[in-house]
Length: 456
Image (cartoon, rainbow, N blue to C red; front, side, top):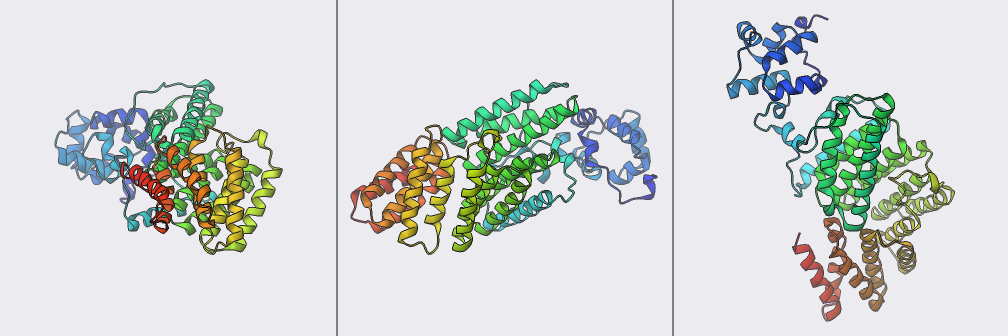
């Protein structure tokens, strides 16, 4: 193809991801950059047209003249479509996103709505099999730069990644995302470099799956500490890579976690859509445990939007799928979903009904107690969630003594984990305390929650 006949053509983003090209860009070695572009069919005339340089300037660069002017370097980067950060230039929007400079701040509702719509559309396209041209972006860092990685890898390297992911997932369960979020993000940055390494096709497939799971954990831990935009980016990348290797069980798990993020943010109908996409994928995966998990969370979302009939149907299917599931062959990312999680999901759904009655509250208390009875000591954060929901249910049902006991347990445990999400889930206890202005015990619990939340 004669590129000169197509002025609107742009250079493929994957061009900038080659190891030698990245080195040349980092050194601002435009002679090498232009030479490599010519090797892939980009003419001097097209380079001149895209960068705004004259033919004589291109000739001089190819002869070895260094370009030092900052404005010209930016014009060249923008014209060719090179992320500015690859050339060490001032941050632009894409570079800032790539370097993940955002801290745990809360975006405005308007911008967050745009993010949700974009992520939901992205998830739907990937889930339903629509082709997406995202492969070139997989080599771009989501976070900051890292130390060099090996140029050749084998299955043992992938197994090391999986072992580290499992260890950090255990830390998250016990101590909250704040205890390991940065470590997970650092591991993501390092593992992403392995995509450029030489390896067998089997190793590459296993690596993509391991990296998808690691992005999934990075998204989950980021969500736990209030980094919602960062979480969405990690989840989007995880879903792309899980679908690329056709692991539908992991893809469904990622969609579940996307749903949980938006459920927490009060975007109940958006959460329901993520859960529904996840259920479609889970069914195709053949993993009954994943289907059960998605149905249980769908029930929670249906309760929050006031659809009791659909909530009951989802609960029924969650129970049936859980009983039939082969728990022994479950993948690492869904293995956590045991009886405790099933009971907890049902209990929380019952308490979330917009028209909850006494029978619903009684059922919720029964299921939440069952969840706590089955919950292991290694799942501290989950125990806090369940104790909080149990306290609210007891207080709403009129059993103040049991409510106070569960509330004290929840607040005491919340002080031991690093999780903004956990503190957010305590808020209903603060709100319910306004009904008991003369009860010193409940007021003390509310003050303890206020103290914890003020430390964020």
